Length: 389
Ligand SMILES: NC(=O)c1ccc[n+]([C@@H]2O[C@H](COP(=O)([O-])OP(=O)(O)OC[C@H]3O[C@@H](n4cnc5c(N)ncnc54)[C@H](O)[C@@H]3O)[C@@H](O)[C@H]2O)c1
Ligand SMILES: O=P(O)(O)OC[C@H](O)CO
Image (cartoon, rainbow, N blue to C red; front, top):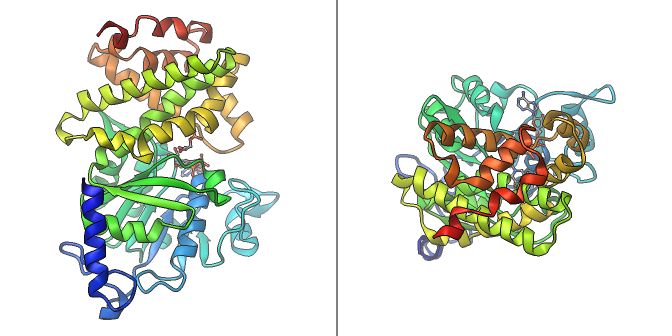
């Protein structure tokens, strides 16, 4: 498997160096450790919400005393006022994102910056972590100001929508930004738990082995272990699609069904995820084993038990409010990604006359749109295609 090959490679490369840090040489780019007198690489985090702040804590600590990465990490923050103060000023003086990740101290080498072009200008590694609806505009602002030989990684769990249907966020980033390579990282990673250093795993999907290993070095912590796989497309699709299943799990909770029902929703959701990737990402050569990485079943389980999308599903049953109203009320500025992904999938399936093949995804969309009563959710699953095969 690719993951194992990468570990072997890392061992080999590391053993060539006199220091414990490996040497990286990305194709066409000069990426070495400082032992070979190359400049250290500078990291910019594009986004600063709940997950953005948790990952800033990991990266901020990981780059300290590194021979590969610059110690100062810039974090672009969509500026807003909290109690009459700019959020960037609060983060830079109190070292806490009081709005999106309260109660967690960020390393002092993470510097919040409200100007996106200044934030990305000198970055060699761009870490994208913001709600997916803002990606396009964000990239367009960055494009003329960034280094053309930077590399990117997307932590964003969503799809982009184009005239031709849905598209991967990593592709949008790459296409908008000088075709730079864009890896992904997805996994069972509820931000609050990660920020409190509770052990978990994540999956880096990267087509270039050395870039994947470089990113693993950047992201890993004793409580945050990463595996690297080549099948980046499946990793990314799992991250987007599990949000929809999470809402379904919440509807089951809201309807007071039991654990068997929730397990059935998780299984049927997984089957729809696998079918979706098989049908729509056929060219990507997705691998079954990727579903057994953290980005697959593990993230589905975490989201269906502790995620914000699950909370939304539960709230949709007990309240008549719109999704936007519930988002404001429950998340206070954070964002549910599931309803948007469900709409994107629904619209694409409708155009292709394939709604019947994905009854769970479709029902979640209709319930979020208030076109269907949540009490009908389970009825939509009784004659699931999985039961007909
Ligand atoms: N929160 C988690 O537990 C978690 C874990 C893993 C992955 N993710 C994924 O990470 C991505 C980002 O999620 P998050 O939790 O960091 O964000 P979030 O849900 O906390 O979203 C709020 C962020 O959006 C920003 N924002 C608001 N309006 C904006 C605009 N017009 N332009 C740009 N930014 C704007 C806010 O400033 C804030 O930083 C999502 O795709 C999510 O699915 C989240
Ligand atoms: O809180 P959710 O539902 O957005 O899920 C968060 C993470 O993606 C879980 O891995």
